[in-house]
Length: 178
Length: 209
Image (tube, rainbow over all chains, first blue to last red):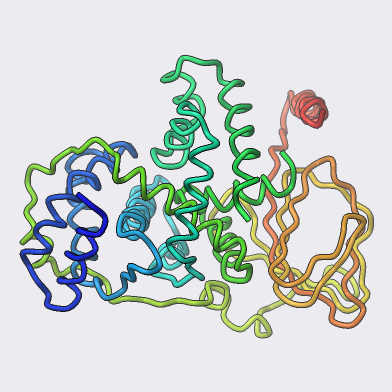
């Protein structure tokens, strides 16, 4: 689906609480959010529950989304990431004496968002600079949160190489992040 | 890894959601005080968000859009703009512990492998030359300090590892308040303790290259 189309749907949800528009957003994003949780090693029973929580948040808090500040996928990604943190917190072996502070740190905080265009340009530049394997490694490390060992196994390269390549990627990205 | 790359790694790890509670609080305060860091985190979140667009779909089996509309377990929106005071309250009311004259600290009670501390230095006070066991992260909250490597003011962070030896001095006019993270070092005890400690020492020595 086109980004502009997604934004139209969001707009209809924000203005008219349009349930049909939401059903389209649901059809598009539910399988992606569910896949994100599964990639992050969350079992299918829980992943669907979390997917429901993410999309309920999208519906209930739709007014918090500002299309001039970020892409819809970015906003939804951050909601899903926050749910993931919360999930691992609750299921951690450590018993927390007090609430884990991450719960409030990752909730809808407003941080100086940059214009989407500026972000887009930077991302384009970074994407042009990185080769396919480097992009895959970023995705595995930061999106799927795989350990270095797991990345090494899946790409069939030595662990040391994974570490040095990731270091190299971060150094390379440095030039494009100001 | 040079300093800036380590800083970005912290930002990326925060955006991915993989930091422990102590570092999460540290990083979110950093993003709040430093607009450049905040922009980088934003760019990175946008990159990660693009991955969501390309992901291979796994359709949920037992979920429909009406479940999401009718779901009632959504917490009310919280707009916490200042993570630090949400956690510590008013910094002036904390039970600061004086380490020596002009240098006070307060250790947060967070269940984490990293230790989170607030540090307050009176104007002109210095810390004797020292190095670090694990990695140390320092974020300036108020005032400024300088050392052999430069000056650090509000919103700046310094990340130190074993090879850094420095003598920080708080600004003569303002003093400084900082937030710090210390990665706890593994110290071995028991029968083979001294041998293992020697081993980690030698290993860390070679890591410096």
